[in-house]
Image (tube, rainbow, N blue to C red; front, side, top):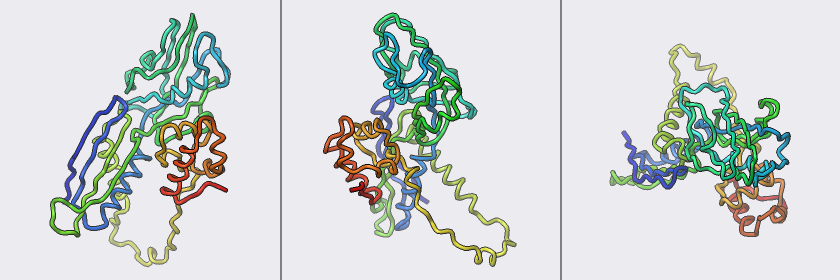
Length: 314
């Protein structure tokens, strides 16, 4: 029987939790299998809450400015994307409505949003906008529960009239890393341990994220159990094998490249959201993006090659 031991745990900020675990011992080769499965579930399958749409009173489209507000609408949408929310487990899947009404000059933060009791803020000081005069910044938000990363174009179809789509970051886990080492609890080189590192955005702690992921995997593999002894084995033998297909690049987001903040933000501003989008450009094309330098282009090419064995077009 293996054990789970927390080697290190840090709360670096309200929006960055980190823990490092040693899991094992496992038979040789099993650690990599379990590490890959956990990493995939941690990054893609855990649910979170996020703003998916906003209505700014007096504004009809995102390329607008608001009188006496320093930021334009595009900047406000980017700031709303950074707001991290935590919801209660019993919350229904229906979108939740929240409001903000600011009239006094000064800085508007996430703390100014009137939220229902079922949703709380992880960082109340998240910046939204600055009012430079007697402005009337009135907004309504739609908050939903979901998985992974959903671009605004996909959520706009379900938004009520007058709402602008916001890129929704549902993922509570921001980064996962793992490696394998020889088990410390055994002298045999045939046993190994899985070292797993988890970073979260503060909406859940790493312990909760690991437990949720293990439960998801347990439920998934539990459905594969054969419980009927009268199963016709010849039927199974005659069933053609389904060829395993790699995940379509259109569904793999650039978050998987784990880029620096500067390179990531430049790509997002250029509407490059998936690996498929990125492959439409050459390294020279990337240099045409605003604030995108040669160092960022080299980083993108290197990470794309190392993680997916892909190259940008010539």
